Length: 469
Image (cartoon, rainbow, N blue to C red; front, side, top):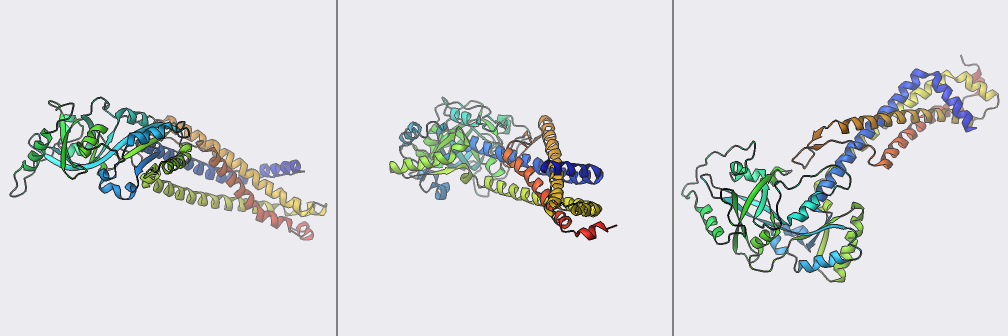
């Protein structure tokens, strides 16, 4: 029975080629637009997740209260006995198979100064102490094969605690463009000192403090070097010198103008001095993002068992911008889906209504021969379904072809939160269930659009249909 109805529906579609082609084209356009936007948003979501996981890890363990209050004074929320905590996490039989990188990090704030040369300058900074080899491993995480990898350039070394990187904006502010050979970084004009203040008094004081605590690597002769001033946990001022080996652009200007990346040991020396060295956070990068919820639950259970005053946060909590972008693009996708759905709906309704009007005599003849109303209704519903299937199939094929061309074209762009260009990809098949959902949704819309004309055809009076001219 169904095969006969499909055959009749196909013949009716072919009989009205032009009308059926225009309707199927509307469905194909809807499928094409929605699938391409799905591929674009999928790539953005996966790219943002990859970038955040590369730099922040999946999970971070803090001392309780740091997430809400620690940004103003990171040193006051140091984790005591962090090495033992890390050993417990790494040796846990549940967590060990999930973890790819387990590393400590130290956040700090203070004043960065370059008192060498005629244009001495200083600026408040936000710093991060890391283990370079662990950071390099983290930057290589690419679960979704996005091709995103921005290594530390030039690389830092675990054995040299005196070397570090800064943001290009901070390098410009501290007049390090020439020593670091930075392009498009003109020297700053000479600024007049404030009235009554000696031009180099503040920087000379910092230089004097820095001379008391020269880092292990010593001063880099002829190289770029800055002095970092911060308060220790005890409130005393402390200064260390950092040999700047390069500058990397950051995603936001505010961060680019203040970012300092240094060795963990140097950051601990600056923050804790001769006191016990602690850390701000323990970073966990997992092998697969699907482990995130399970790993977080296990960490919380482990801390409760050991009565540790620690809390766990994931990268989405640390970067609210990530969730905002996802919600924004999800809303845009919903809007596009609604618009395309309405276009498909009205196109199919118009086509099926015209088909009913042209075939009233046929409907009357079929009803007079004993064909039931349900079969008349099913015939028109199958026509709408076939038009929807044809249109979505064509739209999906075009979307895959266009995505392949774009992915091989080498087009690059700078996404939100990035400072460097990355390849543009349209990941149409990256989430196959969503792509199938879009196609199935459009077919359902086309079928539903045929329901009203189909009901009208089924309710026609046999006598009125037969005498219709």
